[in-house]
Length: 222
Image 1: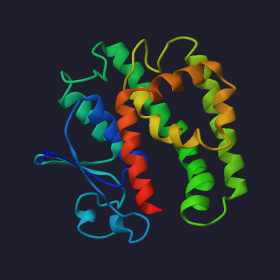
Image 2: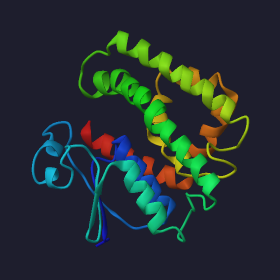
Image 3: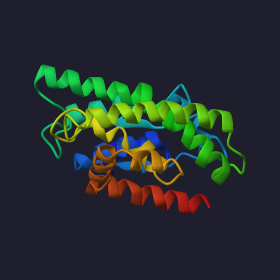
Image 4: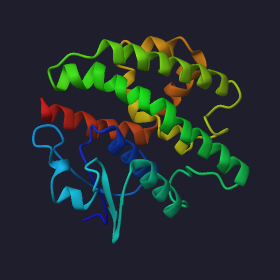
């Protein structure tokens, strides 16, 4: 049994972020499904003992217990730095740039993208509801501003933090993956550098493994 455990559904964007990092590092792990739709298992014990905020994923590596996906990915990238893909930079200035664009993803790209995914995909397809058009328009405008910044950034470097793939890129993958199958794909397609960047990072073998697990989990919920 793998010493690394990830608690959460394979279709959760936060869990997908962690799994992508583990696959990039060629690490074995055990995915322990958590039902967040029918029984709200994440809001009850024993899950709350792993994440007191009742959000997925929770993570264990031996006796270390963590939650918050970006904290988990950073731990994995540091702890297993010499294994698999190096997702961090060693030079302090490069580290600062990687940290900056990781913060941009967490505070600008993901909040707008996650809300749009909720309104455009989760509500109508998984919960049988309708999206809030006001929320969609508000967050679409926010996403446009972010993608404009990204188009300029990617004219200066191949990846968000420099000339190679890092956590600053990986963290975008789950939310972007869901957005690209909505009508918002046109926003990405209208920006050639963003389009090329996404084509590059979504083609990574580690990400394809994540999608295999995600698709299996989604099929089981239908």
